[in-house]
Length: 220
Image (cartoon, rainbow, N blue to C red):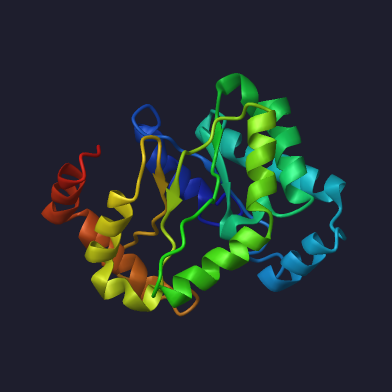
């Protein structure tokens, strides 16, 4: 999240691992900028300025390159905004101009709905309604690498059961899958509504259960 005031410091933390992991850009148009509901409405009504989005995306890529010394290995969007109407067309344009040569990939948030998971299904339905199928078509038309399956949406109030939830996500994943997660250290940050969920995820990923679940799912 290159718009964060912590980005320069966090980039230094990431640099030693840049050859071992994929470090990408989390494109932000909402946090500190515009409420998500307003952005969704403007995108749906095609009232967003492509020129302004183009400039903002390039600024965030520049901030990434300036701090990391390389371009993003992948691109996704904070609150999945990169798939919204108007925005997705700009994302494809900028990808072709700046990221295509490095064969970077883009997150496709095409999810599976599950009976009984009401809150998560509601999130998925909202994201889907903002143009998942059209974005998938764009990625295929322009031969842009993207994930085969996507998972990671769940009700954060169920974070205490994250191990069980994540194992289910693993079992539903195909080769080339992407699973979104939000691990973080223990925090009392009142500005972070999912701080408790972050720590629950962190505890799972640093436990022996995570690797055991991957092995049981025949995934690495």
